[in-house]
Length: 73
Image 1 (cartoon, helix red, strand yellow):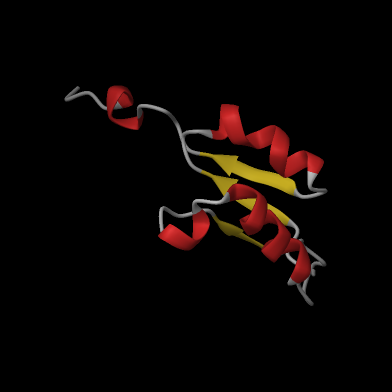
Image 2: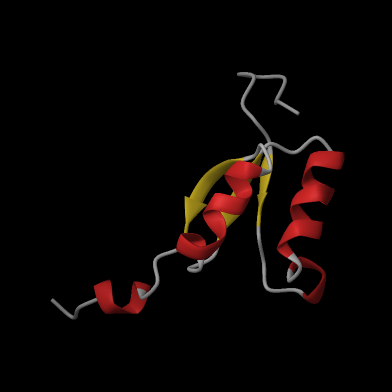
């Protein structure tokens, strides 16, 4: 599924809800509904390959420790 303006692929961000814990089922759901891109949580290093093998694209991956990048200065 793509946008009408720009023909960009439509996707979603994988959240932490119970229904999103089964990655294989989640990816099957995404494919069934015509989605093309998944934004991943910090576990992208472990889940990214499954996304690609399902024929979907990875939009972004959260940093494992984003708070470690923040400093007072």
